[in-house]
Image (cartoon, rainbow, N blue to C red):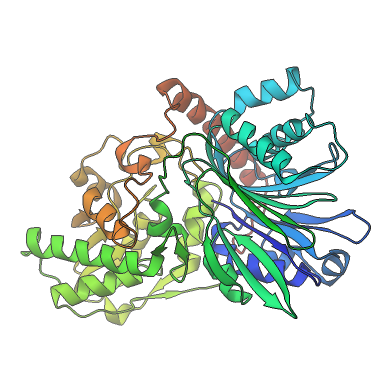
Length: 504
């Protein structure tokens, strides 16, 4: 689950892109990159592993000259965590193209063979984003003209949408032309566009979340539509066109559960409001079906679940307390690479305030339970400070199926709910009672913000893959790749436990 941004302005964009990436940091902590186009039509690129504030020093920012640029924060779901796979990627031919991608392609293997055998382009990494860039480049290469028209660019994206499958929100630049942004025909991954007027000039910005627009005083215009492409020239002319024949809007519901910032507006839905409604639905379920539980206090596991927990406490008429102190200098544990790193990071990230737990029956509230690693550590921590009984409520349903659209849960066996009953899950993580949100209630909570959306991408909960190309053999191959990747990571950790700093 990466974060992307692109800006076309009439003044240097390096600082603006940096600032936008810092507010999108929650979407990826593995690597960051910025590329600009300077006055000589040269790409200026800086990318490396680490947080935004660590990757870009003064000397890097000074070199990132130009009034047009794109940026990326990486959360690896395909390929590896090698710095060579940090984004943006670029190719020299044709014209000079650079691209950043949020999502995951589901037919990467076939596309890679096409690139090598039919269009004879070289792919240097295991990243599906580099594959996507080369497919885009090969489509643009079919136009034997020195100057691309907007129709040429839209035609290339139209052909690209027919070839690639999966989830993708992309931002790209073409030397001598401008900035391009496009979204997959299902709109699985988010992408918004905004504008601001400075000294009579209209500047444009695209980003994964509206909060990036807010930070830079860009006015939110709208979401980029599923299958739509946006083209913005150097001088600020904006063109937009639908580039897919079949569009079936199906945004990822897990964005609202966990990934997006609460102050973002995506697909016409307030993330904050959706989480409030998740809490209301879950609170009503607990009051209806678990009224016999002796609950003394409701405590959120910070911080995505705080809004839902507050509503649950209100409905149950129980005290709401902040029982955990969070170390804000440790990243989000879910998006850290490797189970052992996540486990080590939980205790560094959270500490229990004994006075809120000792001698009490506690209802903990979390946004979701994925691998169970964090939950197990937290339950042990809570019991160690004297809690009598520990109940756990999840604002999302059981996650029983792999994700193939850009969330790092591709192996079913890694999921704690896989092939387990709720009682078995509760026993595994060590709670006295475990309560999950019903899927219909989760959908209703999110859907209330935009009733025009008729379907959400809920594959991790229901096993339905909207792109229609996910088979058992595909998932088996994905799990094999995942296990090999984890084995490599484990060996690296054994050699050097500092290979991934938890602050990154």
